[in-house]
View (tube, rainbow, N blue to C red):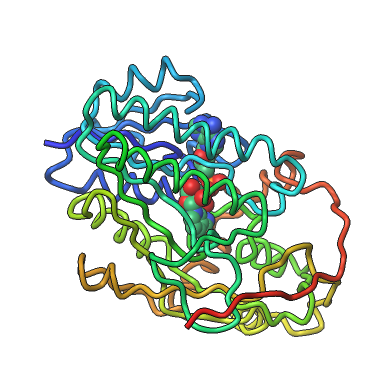
Length: 342
Ligand code: NAD
């Protein structure tokens, strides 16, 4: 029976994953290690908190002694804990490197010492950088453009180096943009939804033509679980949602679902280093693990908007929390660069 340590399990994706894992017959125990930064909330775990299988530990992945003690008691680690918001990484790159790179290395060291059977390192499509055409496969070069993506790319490489050097059974998942219930309102979908539901306006960067792939959080968690169970050590798996949209197209859907119009939208100068387009080829996860996204985007977004409509007590306090607010950053009109992948 598996004993799984989930880092960042009180965050957005990690908490959905914990709820999923608690349902698995072959999982005996799940321990969440989470520092409860501004992004982590016990409420995200909901009733899962009462599961006899679940233990919650508030602690930092940079605490090597704590991590070592926890790793010793587990058979696998699924590593979600990270500083995850791109805009914040412009202001405090150091904490992104500390948590995302050195935190990952501390976990890997502990996994090596205690001979864990699997280490799933959860990463992002942003490590591939912008693509003007085509889609990135797991073999493509990493060309991150912002500190967040660079810290994730570095941590991916460190994780894979522990497989090659020490035989730690590491798998890396790279997913596209997640959405769903319980995401912090600093990210674009919950930011727009919470503002539109309050009758407020939203801003689109540049011409709104930046392309992102959207993945329902439950689909991502399914993919990560497939990798935990059957992923081959040393391999990277792209996990996508099947739907590429410009931010303008996404806004159109959100306006409709929230009952608002284009008069609620202001176009502002583009953000620094706002990658023009991300796109991933996900055929490897489909062929090797049978992974396919199941959520249609419109259904998933309707479910998400419905959750924010029904749960203002979950997100309104975050709007009042000064740590949840982004300090103003200087904007410039970004040069919209990208590389072309065949
Ligand atoms: P999140 O910000 O919602 O949650 C991060 C969690 O990690 C929080 O609970 C926080 O308290 C915890 N944490 C942060 N620093 C910590 C530390 N030093 N020690 C222990 N816990 C710490 O993030 P998320 O959106 O759920 O993302 C989870 C993972 O998935 C991250 O690794 C992120 O890079 C990756 N990812 C996210 C997306 C997305 O669209 N959200 C897309 C691709 C990949």
